[in-house]
Every structure is written in C-alpha cells, then in structure tokens.
Amino acid sequence: MKIAVEGCCHGELDATYKQITYLQMKDNYNIDLLLINGDFQAIRNNADLACMAVPDKYRRLGGFYKYYTGEKVAPVLTIIIGGNHEASNYLWELYHGGWLAPNIYYLGCAGVVNLNGIRIAGISGIYNYHSYSLGHFEKLPYDKSTLRSIYHVRHYDVFRILQLSPPDIFLSHDWPKSIEHHGDLASLLSQKPFFRPDVESGKLGSPPLATILEKLRPKWWFSAHLHVKYEATYRHGGNTTSAESPLLPRGATKNPDEITIDDDEFDDEQPSALVDTSENVTAPELSSELPSSSEEPAGSAETKFLALDKCLPKRQYLEVIDIPSPFDDTPVASGPATSADINDPSTSSLESLLPTSFTGRQAKTSSPPPPSSALDPKLHLTYDTEWLAITRALHPYLSLSRLQDPLPSMEEARKMVQKELEWIKENVGEGKKIENVQKFCMTAPGPKKVDGKQPIRYINPQTIAFCSALDIENKL
Image (cartoon, rainbow, N blue to C red; front, side, top):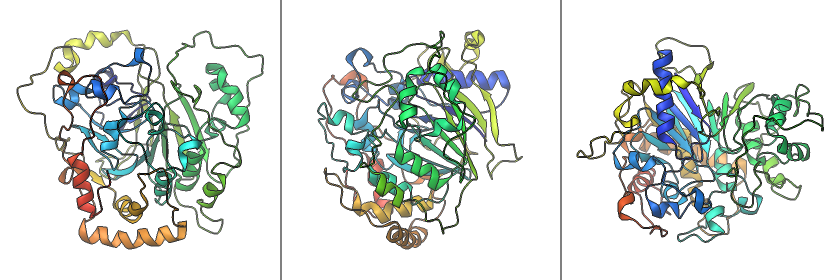
C-alpha cells in the first residue's frame, strides 16, 4: 500500500492534494492513503477561526471549508491527528474520532483504526506539563488560557494508548523525547541550530511520547511540529543515545539556506516545543506504565521515525512510503517510495490534467455533499476492536473538569480491557466498518453565514452514534 505522509498542513489542503496528484501522474502509481500529522486546521467558518491559537495576522480560512461543504471532495482517503494550531472547537466535537469532511477522518484526541489490515494509532496535541495531569475541562467560549490548554496532551489519553498491543503506524504532532539522538543529529543542528540548548538539556520532545514509543514499539512513527524533515531509527532495547549522532561543534554556523519563519509557535512554548522534564513532573507515573523487565516485549525490534516539514514551496513536507498490507495482491518491500519534489517547476505544466477541484474552477455545488462512505472500494477502514474495548473500559475515567480522577493500575486496566473485549466482540463485532456507524454530516454552517465570534457548542451526531454503538454515555 502506498501511503503519503505529510508534516504540518496549515490549511493547505489544495496544495497537498495537488502535489499528490502530480506525483501519481509523474511516477505512474496510485496513492491509497494520506496521513497528516497535525496543524490540519479544519476551519469551517470565521467563528472557528476565533477558536484557533494564532495571532490575527495568521487567521485565515484556508481551503478546508470547501471540502466540508461539499464544494470539493478529497481525492484520497485522508487520516489526520490534531496539533497545536487547530479549530479546537470542531475537533472537540469528535473527541472519539470521526469524519471532518467526506473522505477525511480524524483519529480523535487519541485513536486507532485499521485500513486493509494496517493498524494506525495516533494522539493529538502537544505536551505541556502544566496541563498533562488535568481533565479535559475547557469549554466554549475559550479564554486566552483555555484556547491553548485545550490542545495539550492529557495523561488520561496517554494511559489509554498505553493499553494497546503494538500498532504498525503511530502518528504524533510532537516528537518523542530524545528521538533526535537516533538519527543524523549533526545535520539537524546545522538546519536548526537553535535546537542545541534543548538537545543538550534533554528538553526537546515529549516525555509521554517517549514512553509510548518504548512501550508500543510500532514499525513506523510519523511526526511534524518542528518544521524540519528528520529521519531516525530507534532500536528497542539498545542504548538511549546514538554514538553516530554527535553534536555539532559549538562554532557551527547557521545554514544560509534556512528559511526563518516566525509562526512555529505562537504561545508560551518555545519554537522547538520545549517541555519541562524536571524530575518532579510526571516521571514516576510514566515509568510505572512501562512493562516490567520480566514481561516479554512485543512489537517491532526497531521503529522507523520520520518527521516532515510544513506545507510550503521548497520544503520537504510530503513523502510517499510503501507499507505492505495483508490485502495487497502482491507484496512490496517496506520502505520509502519517493519524496515529493517540492522544487519541481513542472508541477504547473500539469494544470490541464488535474481535476477541476485543483485548477481554481469551482466544482458544481447543486448536489448535496457526498457521504463519508464514498471510499475507494478496495479500501476497508474499520474500527480497531482492541481500541473499542479500551475506550469502553476507561470511559468512566474521562473527566470534563480540571480534576482528573485517579486512574487504575496497569494491571487493573488490562483486566478491565479484557472483560470489555468480550463485550465488543459480542455486541459490536470485529472489523466493524466505520462508515456503518459514523456518517459525515455538517454541524456548523459554512463561511458565508457566520461572523468572527466564538461559536455555540455543537453536538455532533457522529459522536452520538459512536457512543451508542459502545453503549457508553456521551459526555461531550
């Protein structure tokens, strides 16, 4: 299966799909899936813009609303997670996951799905130790503080993810803490020299994601956020740092080709997503959530890590990778297929061959938006049975107040999940197609009927349907 992976989208869906179409025509293959690793910006209207933590000069609708209203249709199945520059009010409607638009699926604050036998897991947001142990307390209208804290990763969602058996692919916006030591660190620092203090102090990346990486051992891990392409290989059970990745000499100079941008981060976090990893913050509970030394480790012996840039010209924001699927007619070797040649000037010469939605001509809007079930017939997007059991088992602990109730021990949680796994198999079934439970529908209107004030709270029918299928309370 050919999977395109993108770093930060920043609302540039038209450019992303145009590049995918160009690659398919240039290299004569079909891309089956697009994975976007946060900062997607699912902005439906001006009210959603008021729920995104960016300075006014960066507030713009972008292109997503056209896919939301049905003016355009995503040409490839797209699965996304959230980052730290999002219409957080819309993503919250689909906390458990759901269709943001036809053919565009959000994994939720944390989630797992299966596509043709490939297991894809992910967690949205970025790490901030002040918010990590809190509940999901933010409510509309957001103030200056909650506009930012709403996208901070919570221990509750990390704890749920840690109950998983190993997935094939894991998506995060943040990088796992210390992953930079497992690739060409000298090259990274030559491109981003301001990362050096944080690399040396161990503050680059997310501690909870490092725990997830060590526990789940996925084959692939894709990230974004730091606006740079970076590859690494994390060998499980080995040393925590790589002797092959020495720091640059302190006299190293800044890359003259580096494009300085001032929108990497717009809040109190630093451009490199620095976090406080002091000993009194979350470390004890994170270490207690790793398997004991007596447990047989599962998952891959090594994890291939790939972070990508943001969607801009001359940036390495898109890469196509071959990942074998049990549904494939002929097996392929797992590994990179091609990178998007962002500098290729011939892209514009294909303008006449591109679908209407890419050429600037408006698609017909007389017909209603297509259903979310309009998937490529050869693709089978299903719920993950184990994840449904985890969701059902730990749902009573989902807190919508500042106080997060104590979570069960890992051993207790495993027993709870095992019990609910039987319930899921009996009452939901294994391999349940998502389209048979959740169907896309518009909640908020498109951009023409809404002012720039924060919106009312919408209750999304997809969340109602999901909770009903699992027989759990819809707390949203």
